[in-house]
Image (cartoon, rainbow, N blue to C red; front, side, top):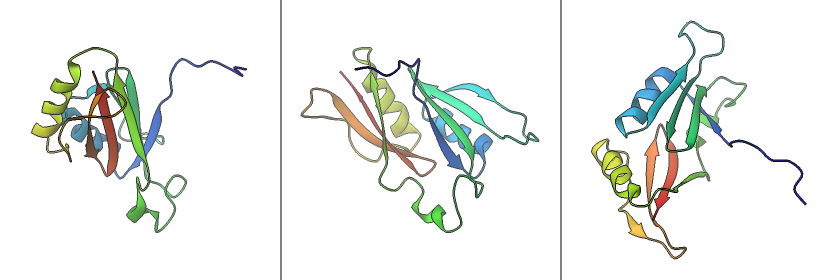
Length: 129
């Protein structure tokens, strides 16, 4: 039984500075969507890659308690699979050029090619056919 449907699922990542962090994503080929003014009480930047949207928030105690910074992103892979055939090669090249790819693009048992990338301390598993 479906309880509800939703338009999209996005993650909010705690970063030291969302505006500087946005630049790391842009170097890897992500697109800029939105940001609040830098003097805002709710500092936020939003980027996307294909249909995957990532919100870059601030690493205040509300979101990242004292001492948790060393474990930021621990145990989490953010999985992004592209619907468009063939795009994963371009995505991989962009992440390599930005120094974000941490492994080679390789076929996976579930029928896609995929690679891991690390941006702003967070690990992404990017996949496509």
